[in-house]
Figure: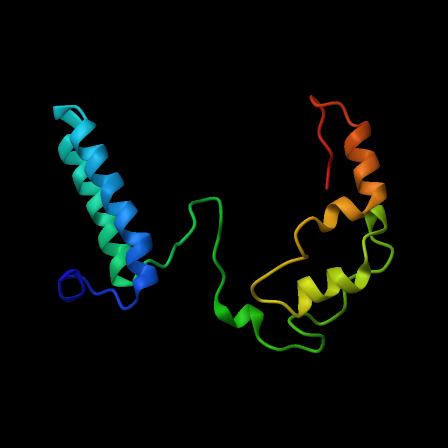
Length: 134
């Protein structure tokens, strides 16, 4: 059984790992002979780190992961102060404060931005080849 061969503790982890292994096998079998050993080596290293639980950099650069201590309780949730008032596009300050200071896993509900008329107006008025600076 695969559970005895791999240090994986959940079915969910197996569901995530299985497609990764298949992807590795496809890359290896389709790589040209000169790069095949490099592909095997690099992908094997990544797979080993992922499965061992020692991967300390879950996101590629330029993302920088901070220590857990930055999320410790402070005077106002995980910050010393609430989010500023009078946010751009009249975004709800209470929603922003909850997301920024009292939240570890999720943000606003799906589609929230579509209910902010000022933001939608600016996006609709901005040509496709231009940027909106946040």
